[in-house]
Image (cartoon, rainbow, N blue to C red; front, side, top):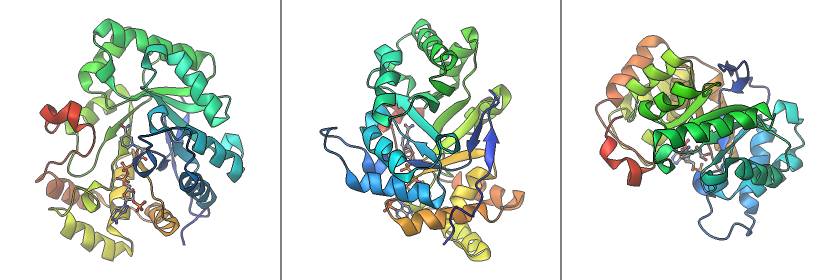
Length: 296
Ligand SMILES: NC(=O)C1=CN([C@@H]2O[C@H](COP(=O)(O)OP(=O)(O)OC[C@H]3O[C@@H](n4cnc5c(N)ncnc54)[C@H](OP(=O)(O)O)[C@@H]3O)[C@@H](O)[C@H]2O)C=CC1
């Protein structure tokens, strides 16, 4: 089993902080559509197992309704706070960002998070509103309630609004990213502006986005490196300085994912995945808002 002894590299952010290059997500399977007060013990147990395996980067959001579970799992795993990297996101209470973070911190039983994200840009109706919300995020960083601030699901035009007036630029944009949604223009923009990219849905080609044109190359690279195709996908992100956020309720799978830290893809292999992946388009999340956006 790959585990805590498998070192996870960090990526340096534009504000001087560092983020571990793989995150354990508490959305997806754990997302609660119903009553938030019904505690999901499986989510707690999985988040404890993840930390024991060495996943110190934990990705939450108020809308998942699992922050209480994440807080309990953090308490149970007893990893020193300074070793953990905890993210949460605001969307349900976007009209009161400081109040939303205060509520999240209470549920997480923490005094600060490492990264606070605006979950999506679709709830701001004007440039001024985007800029006002970002100012609130900057205030939270200045108060020490979050070490870094960023966004999720933003396109270049939303980021442009922020850059017009920001004092502190976004450290991260968390987006759907995998071989069937390579976001080439957006990634180029991130690099030019010093914004780090986090990839959710990194395993899409082997989960809901498959079967497809990357299957053969993933299988062949998996044989070469003695891992599963999923770990090739995680490594494909890491080798492009993109932080994959993944998840699993299966301890063996979480352990296997860490094998992505034990090898590197060469530029030709990355290119082969890019070329095969670009033959198909698949978007797995936010389709109700993004159906018209095609490959962006
Ligand atoms: N900012 C945003 O808008 C969004 C953020 N996220 C964040 O990203 C996190 C990661 O989620 P997601 O994007 O789904 O991550 P992935 O693409 O990494 O998929 C993880 C899921 O795939 C399943 N899986 C893994 N390997 C296989 C396989 N070989 N065959 C079939 N199923 C497999 C796992 O199921 P199993 O439990 O059975 O192993 C798990 O449910 C979320 O938890 C959330 O924190 C996600 C979506 C949107």
